[in-house]
Image 1 (cartoon, rainbow, N blue to C red):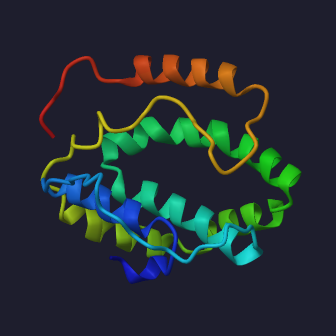
Image 2: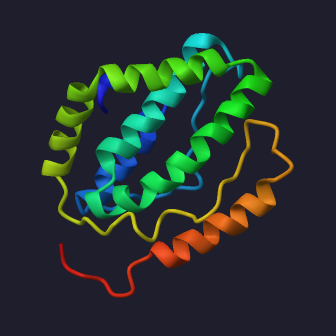
Image 3: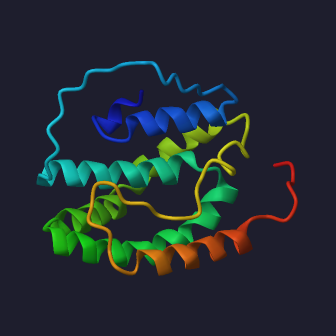
Length: 165
């Protein structure tokens, strides 16, 4: 686990890095975990969730996938800011963007470390879904339309033939 995450998305990061390293990531449906968790939205939590989401994408996604993902991020971020404003955490959203702009070296160094371990650069290509689903936030009314646009984008952005990296 990457200690810089502190909390939130460290499990996603570990799973993605395992896929990229060519390791098997296995789901054990009978596994049981007890987690003392109280869902709340406080400023620190929302900042860490957002920062770590960006760190995961910016460091873990191989270049070909990151280049296809960035237009989607650019499209979605203003929409997520509207959701954040509606739900009272817009300051944390903007604070995350400021953190990213002030820490390019941390992002670059982490990306270099992660990408140096990649053995299967295409491992994530078929794992990502072409739509956005929300389980923690109220679903905006335009989500169905947005998902149709995203599905079309991913169809067009997907390489026609697999090319060895």
